[in-house]
Image (cartoon, rainbow, N blue to C red; front, side, top):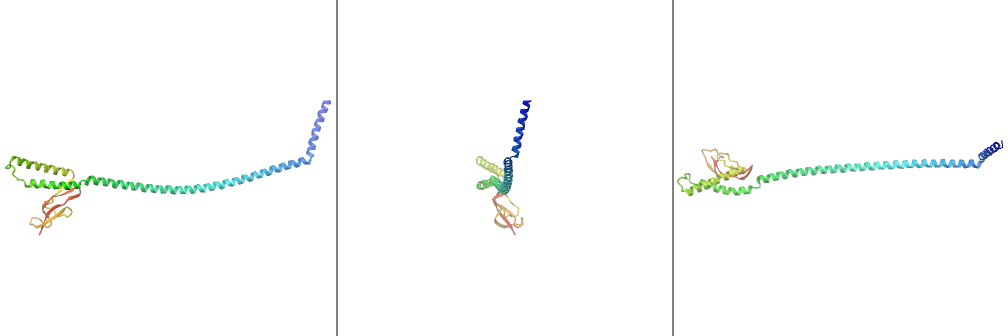
Amino acid sequence: MSKFNDINNKNEKTNNKKKNLDKDPSNSVDSLSNKNKIDENEEIKEELNKENKEELNKENKEESISESEDLGLDNKEIEKLKDQLLRTLAENENLRKRTSKDIDQIKRFGHINFVRDLLSSVDNLTRAVKASPIEKEKLDEPIKNLIIGVEIVLKEINSVLEKNSIKRIDPIGEKFDYNVHQAMYEAPSDKYEPGTVIEVVQSGYLLYDRLVRPAMVGISKK
């Protein structure tokens, strides 16, 4: 029983202390002030969070505006570069076509001066063959063989000229064409109409469609 009484006495003392603490006004004031401080801190935190959020939103807006402006500038730069690229490609294509055309012209007509000089030798061989006697059987054997050799050479040269698209202009009986003919004289003729070629003094030549040398001709007149 004594032990039980001791325990009860201790509990009563503890309860009395709690009651005294609750009754003490200084303890309640401290607790209120602590609560107020906590509330103030919470409010400050909320305000700071709001301000931070507003600043973040503002910064995000500014960044989005700057990014959109940058994108606008980038698009303009891209369009400019595209235009420059297309112009460069077009210029390169035109240059390629011009170069290809020039190369083709050089291949076709680069040797026209050589052909023009060669024609003088062809003319001389032609005159030599025409001046030779028709009846070769009466000639001495060496002279006969020489004339036959010249005829063979002239035939081969004419064949080579034709293979290389060098065409002979021999317009007997054709109308005079000032593009490929050169009039040397006019003569009356009952056989041909006026303005017709009645004689070829010197043959002309074409290299493809380009005139190497006009044909020197005589023309009929009334």
